[in-house]
Length: 241
Ligand code: CDP
Ligand code: CDP
Image (cartoon, rainbow, N blue to C red; front, side, top):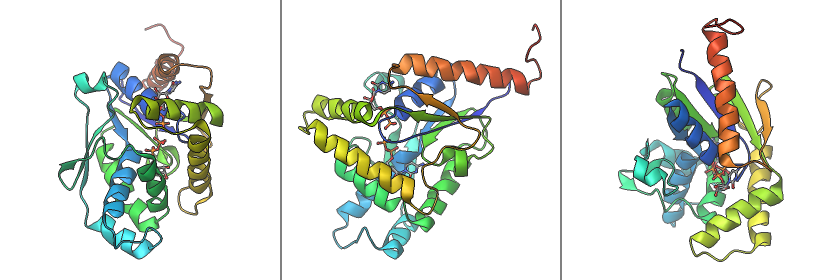
């Protein structure tokens, strides 16, 4: 069977990482969380006190002098909910990038065309061989416009906010539902309205609303679609094999 490129895009908390990781696990594909790259660069920007998040030039220079590496998560850490392991200039920042501050800063960093150019090129190199599930905001539109399977994952904003609130609670961080909902709204708005590679559904992406579905159901549905695409591509669709 041919190895597909699967692109999963959608707003914050729609389930992209959890679902993409599970799909990759079932299919034996590589999983790549493109958002982690924007988060890692944002963390570096936040740690540099002299740097203005509003300065496109400074952010572009920072991106050009930064090394971000995503590594597949070892199986024992997958069970603990770790997505990709993320290294920023050689340092492990896997946990450090999962804060609301970094998430907000990531969506500022992500409006800069030069930053996107550099990160997109890296993402394209990582997925060049196929057999990959990559998730983010522009994977089906910009990174892999020819991906054989594209999913646009959605869920009601309140559901997405509640999912995120629970995650914060589990980490011992106190955030009210309203605070999380505001954070999610603000970031979605910035992601949808930016000039470069905004969050939109690719015309050929399957819209999947998983408000009332769990991770396993959503992943199984995508795997089913992936098998259909594999059959179409190998010319066996509709035939007994
Ligand atoms: O990557 P994205 O921000 O789109 O979402 P995620 O990090 O995969 O999911 C956010 C939270 O929602 C996680 O804690 C998931 O376990 C949870 N989730 C869920 O409860 N039901 C789903 N159908 C999808 C995700
Ligand atoms: O997990 P969650 O959906 O909350 O966010 P994420 O996927 O980790 O992405 C963090 C931020 O990076 C997003 O709000 C976007 O601004 C940006 N991003 C992007 O612009 N393009 C991507 N392909 C992935 C993330």
